[in-house]
Amino acid sequence: MIEHTSSVQVRYAETDMMGIVYHGSYLPWLEIGRTELLKANGIPYRDLEAQGFFLPVLEVNVKYHRSARYDDTVTILTRMAEKPSVRINLAYELRRGGELIATASTQHVFIDKSGRPVRPPESFTRRMDEVFG
Amino acid sequence: MIEHTSSVQVRYAETDMMGIVYHGSYLPWLEIGRTELLKANGIPYRDLEAQGFFLPVLEVNVKYHRSARYDDTVTILTRMAEKPSVRINLAYELRRGGELIATASTQHVFIDKSGRPVRPPESFTRRMDEVFG
Amino acid sequence: MIEHTSSVQVRYAETDMMGIVYHGSYLPWLEIGRTELLKANGIPYRDLEAQGFFLPVLEVNVKYHRSARYDDTVTILTRMAEKPSVRINLAYELRRGGELIATASTQHVFIDKSGRPVRPPESFTRRMDEVFG
Amino acid sequence: MIEHTSSVQVRYAETDMMGIVYHGSYLPWLEIGRTELLKANGIPYRDLEAQGFFLPVLEVNVKYHRSARYDDTVTILTRMAEKPSVRINLAYELRRGGELIATASTQHVFIDKSGRPVRPPESFTRRMDEVFG
Figure (cartoon, rainbow over the protein chains, first blue to last red):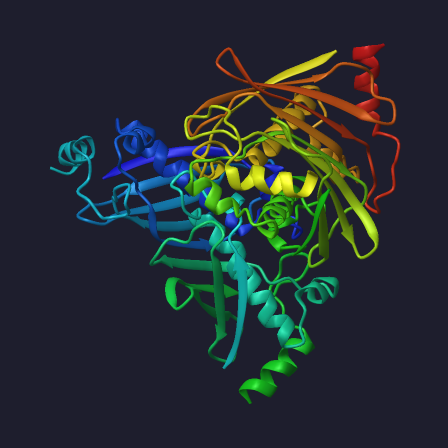
């Protein structure tokens, strides 16, 4: 299992007229979670794209338990629970202090510049082998 | 069953460096779909909030089948398949021409200004009774 | 002089917790204004990028006179007042009904894929000659 | 003079299909700059709104010198050069490493819940007197 904890401070731009964080603003936070998880494992996403690998979102699911508010510090726990096959599954827990405010999951697949699914880059496969055996 | 078809033209601001629409940009489109469905049924969301009713998103799920691109015209078919009880379930199909590019679902509940779940406003309940019996 | 009028309906996603439209949400509207102006003059921006021409923003200025609100219909009058030399200057007036809510201006220059300033594409130059002589 | 330096790491969500940061993404960064400047001076914007004071943007100007890219660290130097009268003027310099990528300015005025211009809150006036005499 790989886990990584990231943190964001809620921006005014991320709120809506309901007075809380706009529900769509959570998606960039999940993205921060997974790119920091990759970076902490020696696989900066910036380098992946430079090498011609892209990792689009195939599916996203978010459950909103509590509302987040402007200026809150939100922690994002990102978890890869199992060795990825073709699909890469990630799970997320978002908290304000000890309070769970949202849970989420995303699915991904590596594609090349032309949009065709491809085998993951070697740096990724090697790291997955190290972690999951 | 209630259905409504909306349409958006992809904005440059909605793309990302992958050259396609950013996956998070679909959430405001779903919102356009459901607010136009409500409006077409005589329940403008603007009026609901003016009366103290809010309809936050409890859960969102999006499956991305094809990528959308800048300047594409995307149609959003929004469907309420069954009479809402406490939870309101909506399903969405996004198409470019005849091609299905994404499917999605959202769950909602009416709350008041203080964030407490409340019975739906009368205008909403009446319309649901008319449609679903 | 070239002018074009576009129209947007304010999205919930474009509001912030002040209860009005987030000031940054106006920038995508200006972009709609200028890309529709280009399209109406036979120069779709989509085609420009396909031909290797990009038209980034060098400078933007927005003056906010009145606040826009969710579900408002906002019209965007985009104007190219003079024949562009190297720099392309555009001016904008945003209205809700007859009421002026914001004025803006942007400056642009054509660049190629590598970011270098280039002469405008022929389709652009030809149209400018037609209009401004 | 009051100055404060903030820092952001460019999010994937902030890029567009030009492969660089979307020009509109800079506005939330300016907002981070000024809210951190206020917080560092003992005037958290969150508290201002809780007390019924709002500080909308009356005017924004951004000059883009260099493009910012995904994963870049961008520093935002925010400066209040002179004691605010009714209008509050802020200037910004955005850098990647030593390189200036953008300069900007914003103008603000305090308003109340109803949108009417009001005198600044005492905490603000007191701090301005301390700094500017």
